[in-house]
Every structure is written in structure tokens, then in C-alpha cells.
Amino acid sequence: MDFRVLSDSSCDISLEQEKTYGIQLISYYVSFDGINYEKDRREVTAEDFYRKMTENPGVYPKTSMPTQVDFYEAFQPYAEKGEKIIYLNLTSKFSSSFQSANLAAEALMEEYPDCKIAVIDSFSATVQEGLLVTEAARMAEAGLSFEEAVEKLEELKMTSRIFFTTGDLSYLQKGGRIGKVLTQAASVLKIKPIIHLYEGELQAAGIVRARKKSIRKFMDDAKAFFADKNINDYRICTGKGYDKEEYDAFHQEVAEEMKALGFTGEVESYQIGCTIGVHTGPTPIGIACIRKFDA
Image (cartoon, rainbow, N blue to C red; front, side):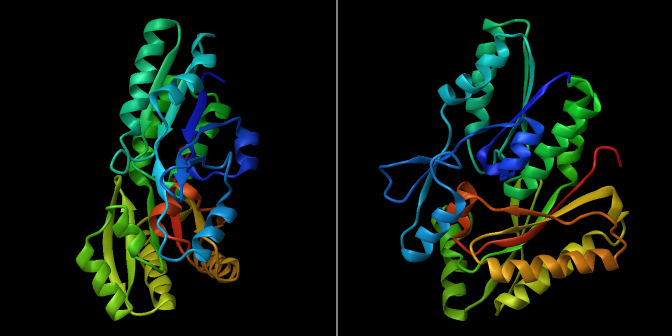
């Protein structure tokens, strides 16, 4: 392989995918008290994190990005060997970690002139980012060069989408992702949001009055997205929070409806992790897709 793939813990790939593709993840930090921070995936699991959220309603966890030193230490073992690295970062609209990663990469390329490090703003988050990260790993396995992969990833990131909802807008409001007025309205009217994530930003796509209706609405949005496309040019996945029973039924329904549209692949399943869970609360559920590099 011509290059190595690294990313951050917000991409929410599975441990199996980490091992299969040899992807190294750099952890964000999460905290419930704003004092004691734990490394996402390494020191706290998504299951434990969501359970603690459900047991402590009204407590809003916080997240802290990796430091420039974290990035330097992650990149350095490869840089000193003169290897090439492609690092895919959580959308820069959500975090300034993109700047820290770039600073670390620039320092290392100056220190080790034989290495190459491309820091790519994924324009995505959680399972959407995970699809892009694993596409990068597939490119490495397929023998694409560093330069070819960087160019292709810049194209593919613009094809990805997330369609999702969450049960409690207060977490998004606390994290500065939506306005206070909408959060208050949602609380009073018991409305549920429909949210899309594309080109790196959250986009409001409607509101409905019930959880099941909100799920139905974003599923219809996902189906409409494929109306003028060859659905088999894409990878499709679902993402879950804490409610396994709800998710299992949802995932099965998505798989059936995508099959009815002519999709012949597997609808993949991802666990939405702690870094994004800080902003969604324990009840995120959604669909993500990305065009495959070999489409």
C-alpha cells in the first residue's frame, strides 16, 4: 500500500474495521463534569456513555478535541519512516481540530522531509465520516497512489449524506448546533427534528410531532435522494444510539426499503459514538450514504 489511513474517534468505525483495515484513530475527549476527561473509545465505550446519559437527565456532557501534541504523536511513528499518511478529520464546521492536525502535519513534514501527510476535512461526522474513512482504506488496498486517493476523497466527501433525528434537541442546543428558540418550541410542542448533514454542516429539514413520524420522514428523504441516482453506486449504513430494540426494527425496515429501490448491497450497521453523542443525546438514529470510489 502506498499510504496509511488515520482518522479521529468521531468517525465511529467498528473495532473490527479498525483491525481489518489497520486504521489508527485519534481520540476526542469526553467529560460529564467538565473536569475529568476520558478518551473516546479507549477509556469510555459508547454503551457506558449513553447509559450514563440516560441515568443523569439534565446533565450535559462536554467534549474536548485532540491537542496538537496528540496529532504529532500519532503521526510521528509513520513520518520518521518516511511513510505517507492520509488523515481524515471531523468536519471543520464542528471542531477546530482540523487546524491542530494541519499544524502537526506541517511540523513533521519539515522535520522528516521524506514523509507526506494529507489532512483532509471530511465535511462529515459519525457514520458518514466512517464511510469515507473506510473508502480511503479500500483505496489503499486497491493500490491507489497517495495522490490519486487524496483527489478521489475530495470528490467523494461531497457525495455523502446523513439523514437523522434525535429525541431531545437540548443537547444540540447546549453544543451550539441549533438555536435556543427552536429548542424551547420543541420542548413545548413535543416536536422532533429532521436533520441532514452534508457539505460539512447541519441542515434543518423539517419537524414533526412524534418519534415514529420523524423516522419515517427522514427515511423518505433518503429514498428521495436516490431517485435520480444509481443506488448501487453507493454504500448505505444506519447508525444507532442507546435504544437497541428500536434500532433493530429500524435497520431491518431500512434494509427492506433500500432493497425495494433496487439496492443489492448490504445496509451496514454502525454505533454512533461518544464524540457525537455529546451533541445528540442518547437517542440519535439515522441513515448515511456515500458514493463508492469504484462506482
